[in-house]
Image 1 (spheres, helix red, strand yellow):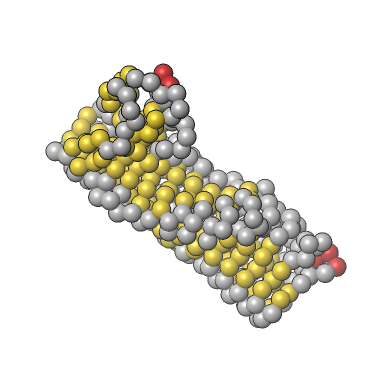
Image 2 (cartoon, rainbow, N blue to C red):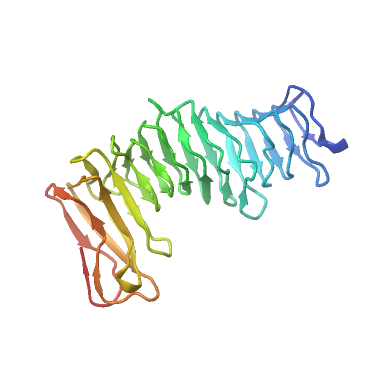
Length: 319
C-alpha cells in the first residue's frame, strides 16, 4: 500500500498486513485510540509520519526521507529501524526513551531536529555507510553498540548533542564538526578529530590497546562539565599519542575532597601538545582549596602550552 498525499488515519485497531506500507507524501497520523499492529513494514520516503502510540507491527521501519516523529516509547514496533536519510524528531512535548530497543541500520546521513530529547534505546547499530548525523538541537542518545565499521566513518554535525552509551567497535574515523559528541560508553580503535566548532565530552573510553586517538584542532573543545566529577579515558597502543592538542580548550570541574574531572591517558600513552590550549575550571558547590589532578599521562611531546581561562575563586594548584 502506498500513500502519496493527505492523511492516513488507521482505524479497526490499526492493523497493517501488507508487506510494506510506503508513505510518499502528506502525513500519517495515528489516532489516540489505535496502535499499528500486524506483520507489515512501515517505510517513509517524503512527508511526515507521526507515531504517537506504542505499536506492535513487526516488519520494521525504514526512513528514506521526510520526517519521522517518534512520539512514544514503543512507537517503532519491532523489527529493525533502518535510516537511509530524512529527519527524526520527537514532538511529543516530553523526552522519550524507546523501550523496543530496535536493531538499527544506518545506511545514510540523517538529521535529528531535537524539539524534545530522544533516546533510541539499546539496540545495536550496523554502519552500512559513512553517515553524517546532524543534531540540530537537543540530545539524541544511542544506547547500542555501533559496529561493522571497517572503512566506514561517523561524522557529527549540528549544534545539538549526540550521546553514545554503547560499547562501539567501528574503526573508521570519527569527526566532530559542530555541537557535542558525548561518549558515555566506549569507542574502539577510531581516530577522533574535534574540528573548529566541535566539542567532545562524556564519561567513557575512546580507543583500545590496538589503536585509537583523539585530536583537538584550533577552535575545538573537550568539555566534561556536567554537574559531577568523572574520568574520561583515552588510550591507544603503548607509546603512541592518545591525545593531540593542537589548540582549542578543555573545560573541567572540581569538587569536594580535591576530586575533579580527569582526562586519563592509559596504556602508557602520550600527550602531544602542539598548540596553545585554554583550560577552564568550574567549581561544584562544595569544592575546596587543594591540588587537583586534571590530565594524567605517561609523557608529553610538543612545544605547545596550557593557559588558565575561567577559574573559581580560591587557592588551588592544578596539574
